[in-house]
Amino acid sequence: MSDPIITFDHVVKEFKIRGRKAETARAVNDVSLSIDRGDIFGIIGYSGAGKSTLVRLINALERPTSGTVTVLGTDITALNESKLRPIRQKIGMIFQQFNLFSTKTVSQNIAYPLQLDHWRKDYQDRRVKELLEFVGLAEHADKYPSQLSGGQKQRVGIARALATNPEILLADEATSALDPETTTEVLALLKRVNEEFGITIVLITHQMNVVQQIANRVAVMSSGRVVESGDVYDVFAAPRQPVTKRFIATALSGLPEESRVERLHGEWSGRIVTVLIRQKDVSDDHGRTLHASGQNISELIAKYGVESSLLYGGIDTVKGSAIGAITYEFNGPGWHVDEFLRELAQHSDVIDFGTAEKPVAYADAVANHIAGAEAAIANQQSVSQDESAEISASHEGANA
Figure (tube, one colour):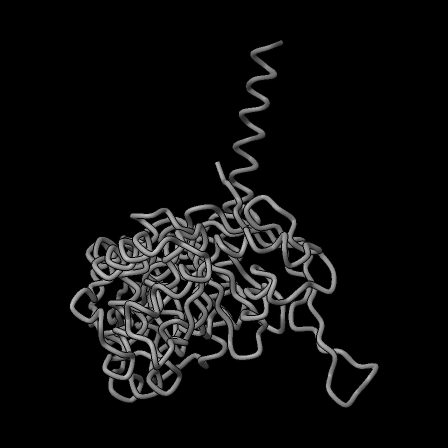
């Protein structure tokens, strides 16, 4: 059962445009969204999408123009500063540029929020020591930020954000300034924070691979709106919006770009086909199910006796399940290949780029794939409704 810790209800945030008295810009546009307690929730979007503004509404650094924001069971939309204080104390924040005091040591940076909160000095010292050990910086306690690497600075930022035992941690582009290896280390630390302390983490990022590594759910923003949201695997495996597809293309390997397909046609004479790999069924926000894909390729190759060559592809893991795409060349008698692809397409997402002699235009191949996937979903829904009708009829008959 879900337990929302943050809820946006039809939230709009507008800003006045400088130099234009009557004009406003809408940074957040009618967003309704819930984040559950204990979750790691990713909010992703390109620059200007509204994601940072949305997160600043959580700790009331920005106030909505309309709609309501509920945090920890309290509608914070119209609270004054004194009533916001106890809620803000339960929210920690880490930043892209670390925001450390250059003239304070690592220990002093971590202790700063405890000093503001008027903790006793012995409690401060004990808490700082605990956090230094947790983030792996015990031996750097007396160093200054200038003596640390980027990853170490962000660890200090995380320790500082955890100092007052928050229930929510907001991470605004927390890994954008880090190299890939350090990013992985920092994300692993954030996952430990979530698992060991039960802290809800909201990740704001433009990096889909960050969401892929640790988030459970994700919301994709574009022009101030949430255009797509759901379980991370479901969004990765069956993205619906163009902006989501562009993001996922940056994080997942496997799907060949148009120029690569052209090169493959120049090097191979057979049928060039990409099969999307999806290890498990996924559902969208409308309750529609898209079944697993690419799980019976070897079996069907053997059944139809087609010749196959693996040309390109890649498989990634999202939340423990495989996802990706594999591109093959299939050869053999034309009717064999046609029959093989027809049966393969019944249970898998297939993009058929044709042969070198009879190529299918890239845009047409992708469009045909989308149309086929939508038809498959509609067919699954129809079958499900027919089965429900049969069950209902059988019950009526039994009752009669």
